[in-house]
Image (cartoon, rainbow, N blue to C red; front, side, top):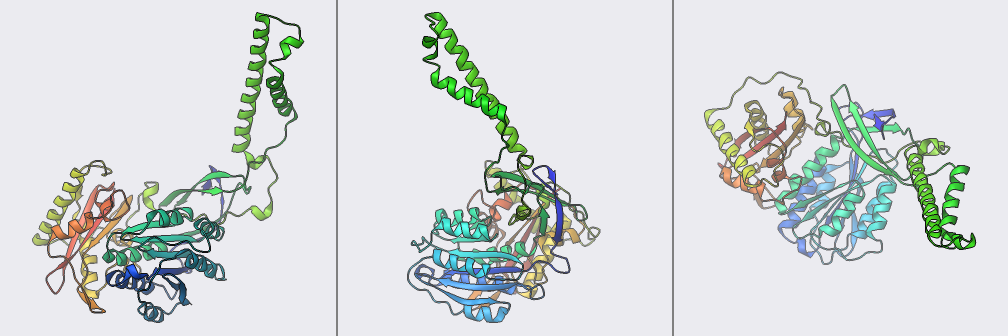
Length: 494
């Protein structure tokens, strides 16, 4: 572990698979204004229930729900009872007005009051522009950063990105755009899975000063071959050690610039000599300023040696970095040999047809595409995709993370496939009915592909995975009882 190039002492580390993983404490802030009436609100409730259903009771995850329109209410205080949370979420009805700032501040205050250690998150959903509240966006960001609370913002439909994105960026959270209500459940499942897959690390900073510097952090986990890179800002000012010689040089330069125009006349000089003296004095002043600038830069880069540290400032707080193998191109090694099963001829043809659509999209969008032009089909990876598609159809759920907490990265590694980066797309939905709404999959591969591509460009979404920096893809399909299908795409970079 290094901070700004210096080795840092790691005090504790918790992984998602440790005996005591860090619990996730979340406040779901849900917009139920008039514009959410009908399908949007129902999709929001389904997404919130999906998030609640993924809570890990054994770990101590807990969730609070705050609902807002023109006013807000704490619908359910912090609870680990998924059934009770779901029952209250299902009672939400659309109402007039939209004002999200006060409920956000309330969410931060409620998280601040928790005494239990854990990852503290606010997950906000809104589909419109908020009216002003009693607090401002800057006040919310300042309060969240002070408590190391990340705000995740989901903008639905015509949501105002200019209001939501600064909240996420300013608190080290994430902004996600959902073009359609049907996207919400997938987004909430992905966020829940991501939060539950984090590593929690506490370390002692080698530079404990509040010196106003941006610090790069590099973390490597040798045992699991994971690595990550990130940065955080340490607020404060640069503290410099006084230096008498430097002070005299700078003072002389300032006095020279002040009196230079009159000095030749006082010395009785005329003509060209006046100009020569003025140029010499000006060069002297400039040299002094250059020396001062160089010394300042040196002092800023080594400020830990320029002032006395205080023990109360020795811990870095709130620098959350999610370990992702793709950051450092460390190869994630498989735990099992590659599977010996094979795709059927029909499944192989489906995968090839879907691959053709992917490569056609990569060819059609060269400016948006990252990495190589065409992907290749990986059959063992297709078996991983097929297995997950079948599992979702058989058990009636749709999520990147299984009910047991298995992530796409876990599934790929268990299949014996090494990678430096991976991603997953899911298209379709296992056939089921809830609250008089019927959910099902797609009738054709083209429909599934178009649904994945019909998302905003240059965003970390399905479209971004299709056009992303990957080498290979695995594609699996599972049929619903009504004949529609669910498709899973697994992307990797070797």
